[in-house]
Length: 179
Image (cartoon, rainbow, N blue to C red):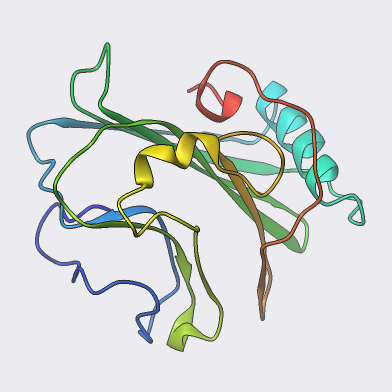
């Protein structure tokens, strides 16, 4: 959630606002001329297989099968060597939904940043530790699932859970969800 058009207020989480949001990197950063967004939706194939496997590793109490995955990748800076690289992966199957935040490199920039999510009226909200104290460059080494650079959450009708179990290491790509 970067501020591309001045519609986002850089008042950070919790906002006590009227909308749910995922903010993999929330900032007032002007990236209009120097960023690249890509997104891809999957309804079959190896990405769904990988998402199913990952979610069942992170949340073993669930018997989950992914039927839809939506991957958004954001690169800030030159395409070949972006200064900041991150992904948000939305995963759904049946009555369950999850989201992943995957972090690659995060260069030093002067704008204040934060990473996390917030729900309507901030009933449930979470800020990734150290993402607000100038240590956001370290996001690629932080995790709640024993995969450096990855944060996984289950999104439900009434809550978001932030404490999945440990899992296996990921590959070389950001989050290993290649677009």
